[in-house]
Image 1 (cartoon, one colour):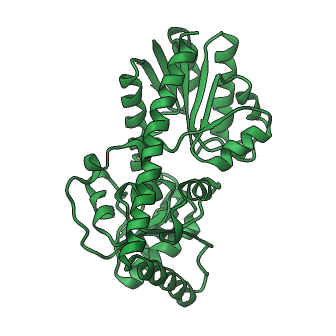
Image 2: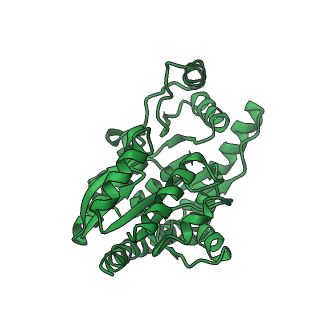
Image 3: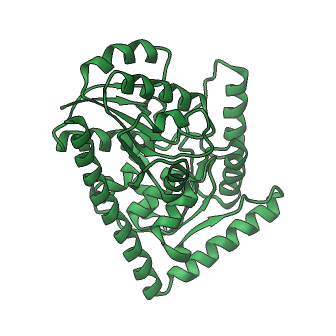
Length: 333
């Protein structure tokens, strides 16, 4: 069976997206699905899609964080999914968020398989009158040993960015004030535009490092005693490493949904946005870190958290396997 994958998100060198795409390709291979092409949502998308859709048995849409608020990418994907369905090609929407879409709702009626990364998105789709399953993010089906090898914890706090620039700046400033490593997961903006230059300069001034988080640094998550992040995939990496974390919301409810499903307790905590005042902000984050660390110092609590992570990861692996089996079924109809 042959599949066309839409929304290849690797172009921005975002580590979470890179892992997702690798797990997607691995899952297809293990299920006996041949990938004919992977398409980015770029200027060549429409032309390439019209060519490639006629060569496949199923279209797999990697929704990730794209399908929300009728964003441009969400509408491009919707148009492609509707076209595929009209041509009689089965469509699977997987690994997706779903929030506040009106025009993009047309995609749902074109899909033979829908799975969201968390239950809030699933409930939104069910509320619109369609059936959807929850299959945790593909990063969570990774083998932790392949990412973290035999690394042992060394302690310390790691700070990551947020998809929202203003919150990223606050987290960068906090890390700088506390002498902590800061890892932006988002890619460097284009420096050919004034907006990109200003954004990168602001982040550089706010932090001690503006190197995009990459695979060579991923073991810092395992070595840390706690992760502070505004990134969905930062949370996923912390869970894979079974490290406690405090998270700030993203531009959708994807982190809230993940935490609702994972049931990690006080060591996987979602916070309100940090205060604007630097002193209040630092005290707010410090206090939150201290509370999580105090909880984790008790062996029983640490064991309970690690067990909860393992239960969620086992569910993710099984759900992902079942998802690929389901995609094979719709492709063979």
